[in-house]
Image (cartoon, rainbow, N blue to C red):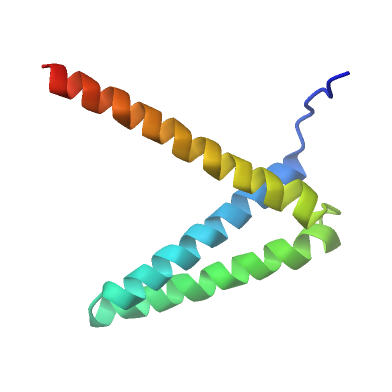
Length: 102
């Protein structure tokens, strides 16, 4: 018997914060590495804020919201990222196909 999906705001919030932390860390590293003087400082700040959000997600998920980090946050986040990348690639291929036909 298939399980019925039930909306859980705690898990949604933790996945949102974990993906925000991941993107801030990646964009902070890229900005700090490739940027100029002011951009490097912004990149470092983005990286630090991403680390803070990441630490809150890992430790705050079980302590504050009683959410299991690995099973309820990390696994759905990985699946959401993979699904988003596949969806964007399909949309991009359809867009490129339409543009090349005109």
